[in-house]
Length: 251
Image (cartoon, rainbow, N blue to C red; front, side, top):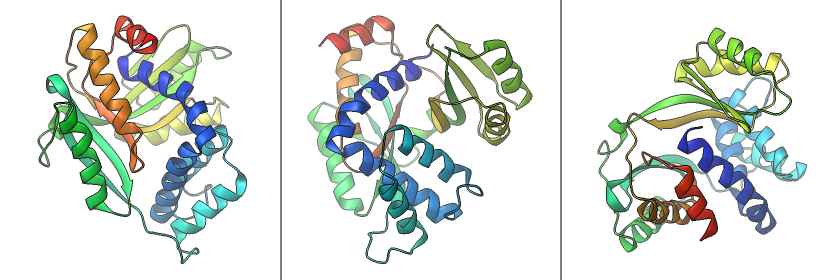
């Protein structure tokens, strides 16, 4: 299982703690609002919105919060702030490249918060294009291994145009080019298969290897960035080994 999948698993476990503080609801509400603004408020006609609502429900987000976020996105809620999606580029310690997806109503605040975290830990913000070339936008799915037929999922993924299917005892991971997202999603959904994660994400073209203690330090910086209010997701080209994850979890 790839490093970004293992890191996502840790984040899902941490999500239960975040949900208690309401932090995850804020992030999900922004995702719903932006999806509704881009593709309309009907989840039957808007795949991105449908996925965002599914993620919100799995986090036990109240129905009224979901509906309010949709109204905010479609403009029915006139008093709500308008959020925009921005992706920033930067470097964590040891030269690890970062792509940081944000949803913000104040760019100056967002940049200042990101710069503070990165420079405090020996990293830096990057110019537009300085990091993006190291990543490819890809269709990405993770599916629980338990209760699912791995061979069937493999066949559906290949039929939909996916490039790679990786599995272990916990999850089945599917990766493909961005154009394969919709056909793979529709085939899996049509087969009644539920996802841990489904969407487009930035996959590094080549991962960087660090020592365990260095990897742990970078993971802590990434975690701190992910905790910022305006940050939706962080992608890196760091190779996250099982040993490093164990050390991070035990720290």
